Amino acid sequence: MSLYCGIACRRKSFWYFRLLSTYVAKTRYLFELKEDDDACKKAQQTGAFYLFHSLAPLLQKSGHQYQAPRHSLLELERLLAKFGQDTQRIEDSVLIGCSDQHEAWFALDLGLTSSSSQNAAIQKPEMETELKGSFTELTKALFQLNTKDASLLTMAQALLRWHDAHQFCSRSGQPTKKNMAGSKRVCPSNKIIYYPQIQVNLKELEAAGWFSHDEVATALRKKSPYTQQQDGTFWLPPKLAIAHQLIKEWVEKPSCSTLPA
Image 1 (cartoon, helix red, strand yellow):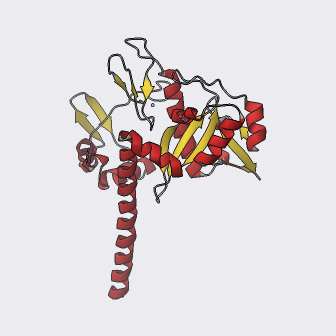
Image 2 (tube, one colour):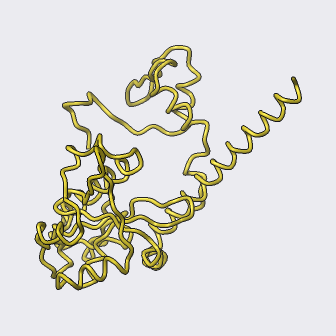
């Protein structure tokens, strides 16, 4: 009996550390793509693209579910050429994730115009006919997508919306320029860097704040659900809540701050 338990524990530990190793490797790879424009551009060569039009993702109906088709760089270049678009438009895409095998995933909106692009928006009906799909409002299709696509498309939409709203510097009024991954925008005239940042919806949340790994770990060790901070009080959900378990799992995993800068 003890031998069986020992084997089961070793197997569990093996799969846990294997998943953890994959998570760390993906995080490091994405960090590299966000910081190195050349590496990101190279990743596009073998990556996959999700397409949007005016913030609505391209979806294909499959029974009672929606699927989000992905396109290779070559397919995207052919598509743009067919509609008289410059392939430079691909630089408007944003990095949204990668597979365990480090296939990078990008999102590109063909219905928005950027300050750095001379291409006009492509008409939606012609594009839908060509791609055999429809650009559908994400809120209408969210619960008919699988978990992976729903998560990726939600993040992609938020990032594309942020870039569309921050094409000009708030101080100089000059056009800002995104890096290849879309993880930041820079004003060439004064070098101010703008980063994406998802604002508190006060209709849904009373307050929100950033807390360090140590602060959350300390809060988890407290017997009282309330932990006093210098700038206020925050509390953790009870142990039976899913939210509590998610926070506990995050604390117990190595944080991204341990990655090399």
